[in-house]
Image (cartoon, helix red, strand yellow):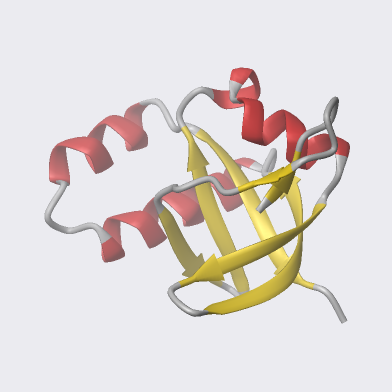
Length: 103
């Protein structure tokens, strides 16, 4: 769940994700134009949900090249049924948002 940066209203966002190195990476193909990414930048503390479980996490844009490459490989491992997407992402990675659990 992100919180609207203007309205303050919480709303769910469905995305592709992969886990690596103690973090959850979410691909934002629209990059910084994606409304949910701008909401995370405005309010980094969000609720991450999967099925009937939820966790409080803090999001941040991934801007380190090695970390971006690692995120792409985590997606490649998870989404082996989409090799065309992964190859495109290797050539031109999307924006990734990293979520880590709050303590």
